[in-house]
Length: 322
Image 1 (spheres, helix red, strand yellow):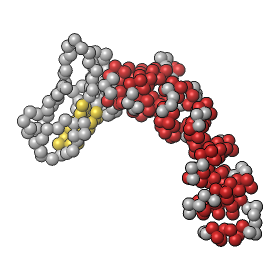
Image 2 (cartoon, helix red, strand yellow):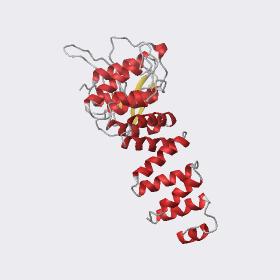
Image 3 (tube, one colour):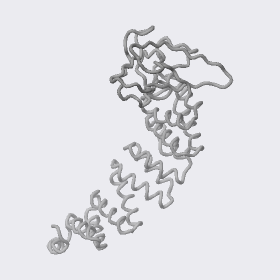
């Protein structure tokens, strides 16, 4: 039925049908009538373990500002539907709003076990009232995946507070073990957001540590033949650049260019970088760049092998150091 009057008429024949009560309650709620809550509550009384009826009642209580009713229903749903992430999220929020922090943290941990996509939203709410260490310890189980832990590290580094960024690096050192054999493998994509954030914040020392850790764990492959004295990473283009971290990056000025990272005819080795201009335009292009960590009070020498063919610009190929 589509109208409240029709629902009232049908209920005269069966006052103990939870489905009828639930439907009438929804129609009353949609029309802004608070009496719908009574019908929704009656549905839960007739069928106390039905997730759907409790969810409708919780939403209606939220809509009409009955916080106590909504909290009670969401918490109940988390118990009778322990595998539903949405119920865990709403129960955790209700406990957090009522200052029952331990219960909230318990449900947030369960939520992230079920569905890590709720992580950023959950941590944002918790960070308003709790320290980073408490959140890390109470919402991320010790046996959680490295991806979830790295997601929290990235989240902290994006909060803008110096203390949060400091905590993020401390957690990085906890998550990434010194012994390669103890490491649970994770992808570069999991660590890339944190690494890039450190570079944006100009925390170069920490970014360098993260980069070296990733190399040590073989998450980033070290190019064959790379000597420790050469600060340019992947200088021979022997492997496809990551376009991140301290590897080669595309600058964004790639219009009218064809870029090949694995071109033959290298000066030495198997590969080289080749750039072809697809149209005849005498413009300045800066297609590739690399961030290199240097130290003060030292001298460095930059060396490269470059050749060109039929270049008609004012300068030809050149290197620029900023």
